[in-house]
Length: 102
Image (cartoon, rainbow, N blue to C red; front, side):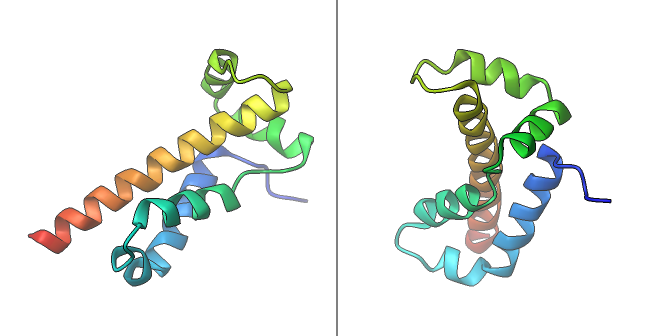
């Protein structure tokens, strides 16, 4: 039995990966770019996985509906997932940069 795709699991997996690469990210001249790359790598690519992820948080569908960039509904949901993951990643970055300063 496969594990169901879930936005919360994707966020946790992203944070775990960021923690595993913390030194590289915090020492980077452009840490936001690394956050974006890591977030992008967690976006589901198969339609079923995208829909399963959206089902875990139906607000993703609302976010996708607000996307005016064009493309299919699957692409819009993927974009909504990307924004959710980058938000989580940027919060992680802010928290860890604040700890470095303190």
